[in-house]
Amino acid sequence: MKHKLFNYLFTLAIIAVTIYILASSTELGIIPVLIKITDLKFLCGGFICMLLYWLSDMLIIKTLFSFAQTRQSYLSSFKLTMIGQYYNLITPFASGGQPAQILTMTNNLKLSVGLATSLTISKFLIYHIVITIFPLFMLILKPSLILEQTVIGRTIIFVGMIVNLFGLLLIIGLCFNSKIVYRIVLLIVTILQKFKLAKNIQAADISHHINVYKTSLNNFLANKKILILVSGFCLVQVTAYFSVTYFVYLSLGLSQASLLDILAIQSLLYTAINTIPTPGNVGSSEGLFYLVFGIVFPSKLIIYAIILWRLIIYYFNLAVTGLFVLFNHLYLRFITNRQGNLAK
Image (tube, rainbow, N blue to C red; front, side):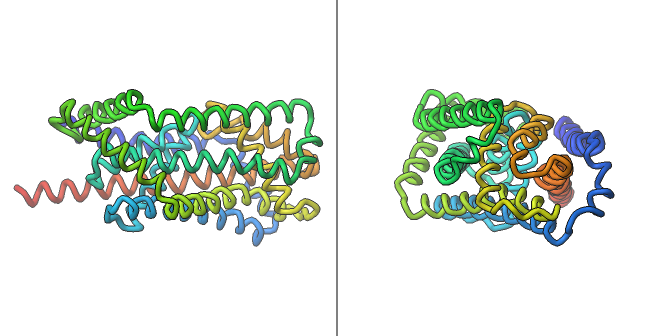
């Protein structure tokens, strides 16, 4: 009975959170006006970039599954992508995606906690290496874009870069700290047991999960071929995400800035946004976009650019992933109930 109640509450929570965020946004009311003033063929390029962003993430997960010799389909990998995206969008610091993916892998895909944690942290580690190096590389290629920023803009960008570098060092340290890993695995097991998703797991089992985690992570980092492949997919993913702004720029009839210019500014913006603990970076994203992109967007168009950008990278992302998570949950409930009825 408690499990059914949790299922109903979970379903209602997904619907409520998604609808509340979408309905409470004042930005969406201006969409009819935006359609009239934008070139839709370029705007479609931004939506295609989001699709490429999801597919790249799916390929990263599928590659990690293959490396771990775990037979999982592309559909399972895509489900994990959408689940991770949704919970990242609705939690501060985008912190909910990884735990949700680990729970899905252990509960639905029947992977061990150690292996699921290892795969998730491996992906998380590579992603953070890429998003830390990307803006540094762009800063070398386009130093003028920093010099043209206001003092406030430069300060926020540099603080963001320092925080990201510190965060990367922290993540690397946590990856190899057995005590921290033990606590993480213990927390995951406790959550699984609370919702009756795992039973009879003892301290010896946790030690086993940690050994699986350490072995899998070390093997991944030692495999240069897989490391390069995952890094390549991650670079494509990040580039696609940052390119959304370029298609927004073109859709407003602008052409003076190059794709490289937009990628450079967007990567610097991302490092700044990433340090602000609001779900989906609501509020902070718009303000920082206005601040750092003022050097390429005319003042009369930048508000439209902000709304279009957020429409694609946040609201579209939230609506699609939210619906996916909801229907996936309903489907799993249907399968579980059907199996229960057949067993009777």
